[in-house]
Image (cartoon, rainbow, N blue to C red; front, side, top):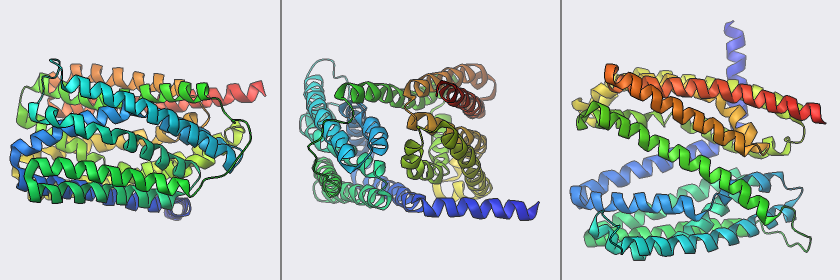
Length: 427
């Protein structure tokens, strides 16, 4: 048994290193570290009020970025990877980037109108700057399209480097601006860093440019359709994270408990870094196999155990270390985050088993199925929260999320197997 487990572990490690997942994992860890360092420095330089202003700007820009790409990053990733050649992939990127650029300009105009209207009931200082900050949105949208194009063409190391240096540019801009000019300097630095990061991504994508005079491989209408479903799925995921925290806040009615649970949720994401990197690295291969349902099914069957193994090892290590590290790093008040974190980590391991079939459906173009599975997960999460939080507090919230993750993984596996079987029967 020990020899078998060792063999499985070696195969998992080789799969991660050969696909570029190690490069992406390193980049994600560094990006996470940069974000932590930025928040730590800003908290000392700007204080609570300045951090509050920046939080509003980040939140608005996060929503604007989601809308500004119109989901076309998903289209570029899927159809760019499935394209029969470099010229066809470049056409997908060029069409998606042009449409995304136009949509992002329209979204920027709407944000400006909103920030200057009576509907803006948020921080007025942040609202005064939104008319300037939001004009970085087109560059950010084009940068996001470019990063997904790099991933679609298998340029994982280039994607990892772009992600890291783009984040580094933003951190340097925000922190240096805050030190020099306070909150206003931080905003200007954020704008400068965002533009530099976006231009860097665009420049790297242009190095893969392939001249072509052929007709478009995929229609703009199909790119928009696929992107719209991708946008709905991503928006649902973003809304679910917010709804989960709102449920805790509304039902526990204790700001300290909400903060403790929020920290557990953020730390849990660390375990998901290698699994996300592995899925990103294998996605182009999965897309190329999408026309052969049997081959794709065999691939994700192998991948799910790699993902589960890595997630289990990371979750076990973090679960053991957390009770000792949390009081030292974050203070004794956050020692209580260890219990919900342990429960969330179990849910993370369960979800990792469903990540491979979930990504397989996306690679095969079954984006509508992904949306309905995400909606199912959201309904289960909220229902479980409403049922468990009144009895078990934040531990109940973590248990509800873990239960939803396990049910989502089971449903994704069943649905994906069914779709593969249907496709094989139709051939």
